[in-house]
Amino acid sequence: MSSLIVPPILTSPRDDAIKLHGAFKGWGCDTAVVIDILAHRDATQRALIQQDYRAMYSEDLCKRLSSELSGKLEMAVLLWMHDPAGRDAVVVRNSLTTGNLKAATEVICSRTPSQIQLIRQHYHSKFGVHLEDDIKRHTSGDHEKLLLAYVSPPWNEGLEVDRQMVENDAKALYKAGEKRLGTDERTFIRIFCERSRAHLAYVASVYHSMYGNSLKKVVKKETSGNFEYGLLTILKCSENPAKYFTKVWARTILHW
Image 1 (tube, rainbow, N blue to C red):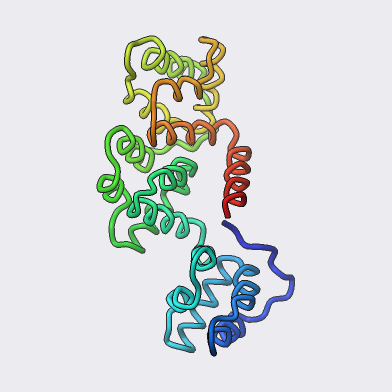
Image 2: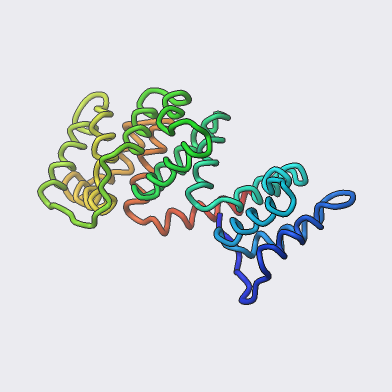
């Protein structure tokens, strides 16, 4: 979720805080004012508004918004109040603790290593628990192993690709899946979580050239459930992240 277009001329954070406080007065909340202000400010500006609001009214703006709003509007506005990594941390926490594991998996497995590092920092700062501990608490099996491997170092975010390593990984995935009875899930987890996006995209291409089958189809055939969903998310984001996020955004709008 991102901000709408930021107006070229902005009022000060103090003025915004005063207007928001005014929107809370009387019967009900003037939601039009809330949306007009918060939806047209970026993360830094919203942080300054929160600081001035607390300084002037000795009250946490997010808590006040939560008490004044409800439903999807409350959820959207409260998510606006965080920077991207903080927002991801909140979404993952809520998803894990409410059993919506697909949502948590989508956020985690669609992020880059540098984004994961920031999410981990925000997660611990906001909730006083390590992301890895919550993953262990709320997931299980191969799904748990995948998420733990993906959020844990070492991470590889480089663009360099070693042709020989790519071929070795393609062969290893073939032996771990199509070539045998059953599936060697550990090999899929190791390659999907330890390799860079550039490398994994190349592996998918080479796999198709070597064995005449797409790696996506192999994942769908060999795995299931949230484990499958996580692997597919990682693979799609490595091959074409722009296409992946366009589909996610379209799906979000459709169900809003």
